[in-house]
Image (cartoon, rainbow, N blue to C red; front, side):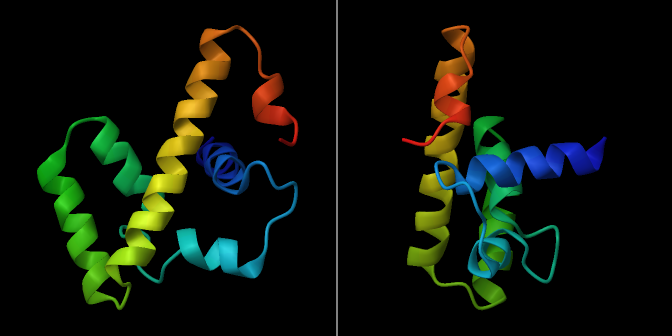
Length: 99
């Protein structure tokens, strides 16, 4: 379901921490659900640059600053990379245990 996918995405966002904070939730859940870091990461990974730029523009216009956007995006892409490596190795232990 969509909720399961959102929970999984949020878990990847906070990994390796085992608990989420209000700040974590606010980082990925802006007022406009179309302008979030998860969507931006997915668009970039799908090579949909024009749509990704629109998300960045929306984040900027809503008050996010470039360093905040880049930091959140870098963290999200790193988490995707670790998850992909764990899946490729046939093990989910690096995704489910603390570092």
